[in-house]
Length: 252
Ligand SMILES: [Zn+2]
Image (cartoon, rainbow, N blue to C red; front, side, top):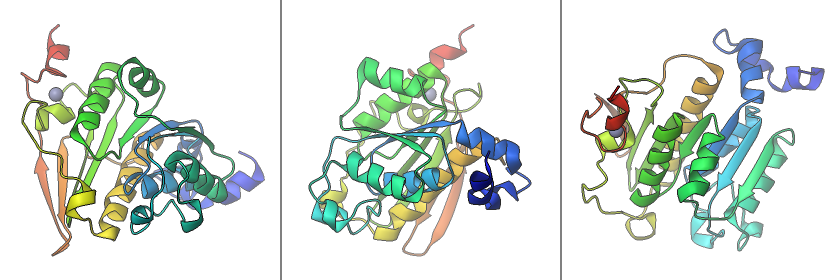
């Protein structure tokens, strides 16, 4: 690190749990952020401010007036721009040292598998189950930890699915792919603006901890927030030995 970097990251370096070594890990790290909306905004902003070396933003949408109530990475004068381009502008303004890869696409299949395998941590900031399950499958296959957040109305949840740990569940252990969960979109149900900020910032926190090897992650624990009363509930989550996604990994 040069003098400017030592200054920029000094408040992380001062932390015993991070220090110079942890900060260097962040500078060398690669994060994949799926979704540049309400959750992806605070998550990516904190990753960039913290100096995560390469941040890949994936989203196929453009900035719309209705996004600005909660998607704080975007701005009024960028309405109409691809969200990933608007996001890259915001992240570069905070920290020009970070490499931001902006991919305007709905990534799936082999392409998604490659992006995940090329990342040290994946943040699922998407808003639909099809994407969540595709991202989970790719993370399990590549053994890359997944930090998944969700927020709707006043309800939020977050956990870490770390398939490097043989005892830790994957997303599908908890929410089976055939469970028939309906997508509840912000566009129809509404979402309390700071809720996505709270959950997205926690996704950044969990990702930074994983990357810097600091603290204990949320793996095997699901945190649920009711923002009406601002009460958190934590439940322990176990691996499903019959999970069709990660179950087969146990054999042998
Ligand atoms: Zn599983």
